[in-house]
Image (tube, rainbow, N blue to C red; front, side, top):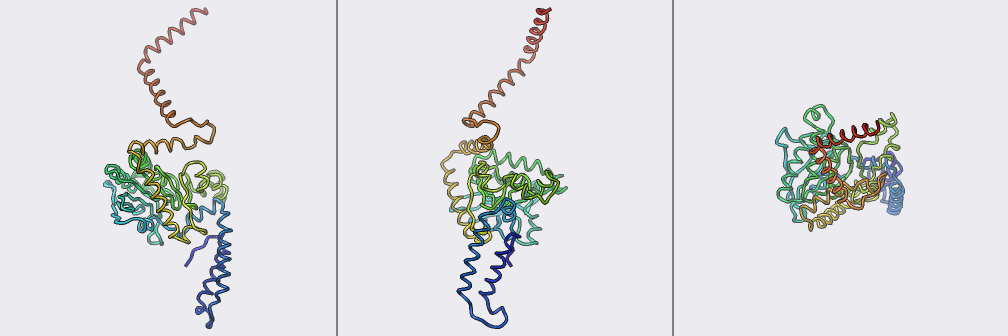
Length: 367
């Protein structure tokens, strides 16, 4: 049974009529298949899909990103990679089933694959905790990312989560610290990392695994620091103002590409990724191949610098501050400031004596 969003009612009616025409024996009596009518309705569906999906607002894109039938990380892992060996446990507490991880082969290249998994039906969604990772999940990914870095293995991450799990147990086990450590680990790696936001990239739960050399994003995916509902509740005290919140947050792939928060948009078929999974699979394969090839020629230090400079440059081309000529200037200025502060700390006693001598000298002079 297909699932439809509230703005797809016209499409739903057309597809229901099309299904009846394709299978006339399910209706009362027997009749012939009306091929002309089928072709006409199929054309109407294609036109309607194009009309609706070419004018989606940010809140509608959020709904598409959360669609029940959207391809999940498990689908991409099973169809993109070979010889996948799943690895479990953080070696501290336990296993987190909301994240799939393990080593695999991508076109004969060894890679580490990490994917946040929401689940396909109610049972698997409960088992996967709806894609909301716990601290042990982040600590598992940290363990595996360090292992991949040790053996110089590229890392591919699939992001699809409403956010990190906010339960009491997760907080007691150090949820915030685990997310911070995950971000720190991602930034310190010296192997190529590619993060692909395939659905919902929510809050620190997504950022923890999206601090990569390349951040790719599906056309109808979203990536934001908070959900539109949460933002509307905080700012307007009205959870119904989701459209205003979604527009203000710039959470769509188009907006984020313009802001240089992401590096590339992966195209989806008209009607969303759930309507043609193979189309999305081929696009992801091409994009991963291209980006791995691009990073292949870089040394470990160049990969580290590339990632550092990428995140340092975010927000510097647009805003109140003028753009820097290069990211190296920022690093140099920081180093110079640190040197000055260290000198002041080292000679603070002598500086204080000179200051008081000048101060009392000025008082004596003017009196």
